[in-house]
Image (tube, helix red, strand yellow):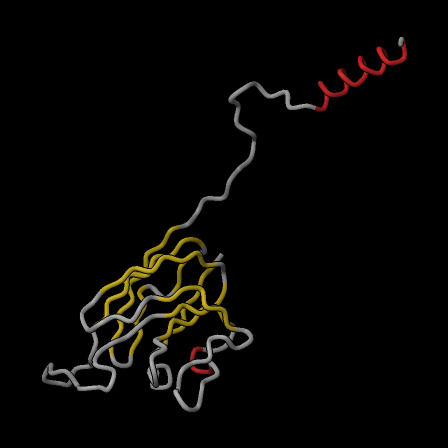
Length: 165
């Protein structure tokens, strides 16, 4: 019995020495990295993707997307296009240059499921004049913003975008 009592005392002492001795309600001494939040305006138009700015720090990024639809001629008149002024935006993480994404040769869509490409986020198809917000968490590295409606990427509707650490 005496051996059990000695063992119990030792366990109690060791448990107290190894346990959490911080006062109740005290916060641990852990520094958390600040979470960066950035806003990027993206203008879509036949066949242009214009992000401003085109580089942000890593963290939460909200893309404020404006679909300006049709391209305009010198007189300010819409130039008709088969897309009807519709566009969408996909945010792709990739080391490939913006104009070198693999494409389907029938639909002229970028093959966003190809190796080396990660779709980080996508906004829905927007009608001419519509706006949309898309918030995503971005890690440092190169990205490409594209409209991946039929033939839009192939016609140059993409922009390179970078995220710094």
